[in-house]
Image (cartoon, rainbow, N blue to C red; front, side, top):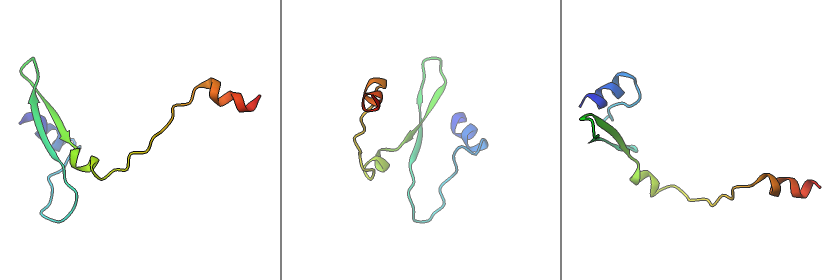
Length: 67
């Protein structure tokens, strides 16, 4: 696949060595114009990440305590 080769040439990805560690799949899906779109599957990594809830502050909520 040309897209994967291009990513390898740019050093954006590298082939995984045969050693213990975290590795993810890279595959391509077809696009409308006949080309392919590279996809990095991070679903395994997502299982090990703690989901922290963050509240998006607004200018009003930030300035309210200042007054």
